[in-house]
Length: 72
Image (cartoon, rainbow, N blue to C red; front, side):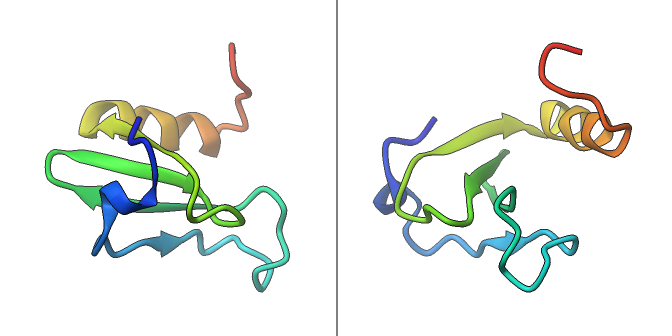
């Protein structure tokens, strides 16, 4: 995990296409950062971000698509 948003200065974030016009309280943003994918809370852009390898990020996306929760 990066310590704060300044560690990711200049990163181009993308918001989920499933966001309800920015009003969805469960919205995240993602950005490629070198060999990792960064994921952060869109309502706390200055907060921490998690870093995932390409393989782990793909597994996360597939898990979300299947509707799995943490620990499933």
